[in-house]
Image (cartoon, rainbow, N blue to C red):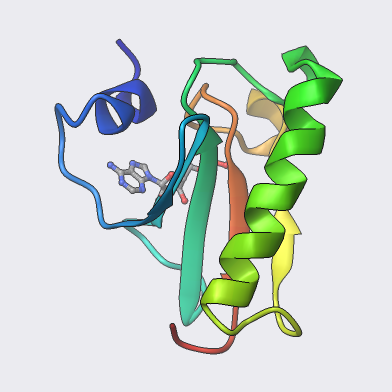
Length: 103
Ligand code: AMP
């Protein structure tokens, strides 16, 4: 089982900030900004390229709601590393949400 699937299944701890039936957001263990969250689909998908467009559409709403709830809706960046050559280390699709505002 991959490390992010273990977080989804609560086999390893994570600082979870939002969760619904399909997605989960938690704090990055090695933050690169004041706020650094990772948003992942609960169903394993290796990377952005291999993910159904429907899932990508749905995650957009989840990220928008998350940003609003955490009051960073006017101040965040989204980063996706797709593939090892692009710096992807964890092979479970994740969206980096980075803000220079603390949540
Ligand atoms: P990437 O290089 O795009 O694959 O990013 C993987 C991210 O996952 C890195 O920013 C790591 O700090 C983060 N990470 C790895 N393991 C954990 C974990 N157990 N809990 C939270 N974040 C993690």
